[in-house]
Length: 155
Image (cartoon, rainbow, N blue to C red; front, side, top):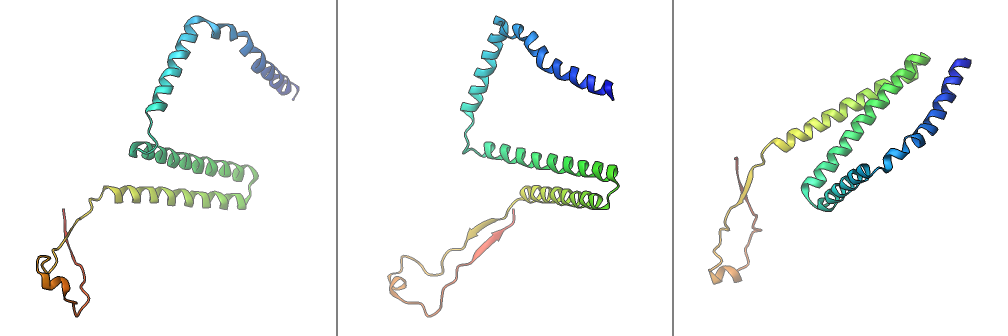
């Protein structure tokens, strides 16, 4: 147990002392030039990103879906580890429930992807029965309520 504590303390000291030891290399002219070029490239990307564009919105929606999937997988794995470690049936049921949620989310993503790939039918309105050029048709009150119909042409 003493050796584990000693290794942990040595690791903490190394985590604090080693970066300051190697810090003098980060101030070299070549490094600062690379940092400037990297920062300029990042600023160009930020300036060119338009939040109203469809590609921007699609990219951020994809990133959000990816984070949700990673979170569900990580949570399910952690609950499985806890259920195995403790031997608890409640944690096991929580793992199963998270697996069901994960499967439902993947199914929902696949269903929406499939719906987007199906071409939509073009809707073409049918011309009105009455002619607009007929002055009597403009002043006459129809006895029935006119309904608009559409013709669907599968494409």
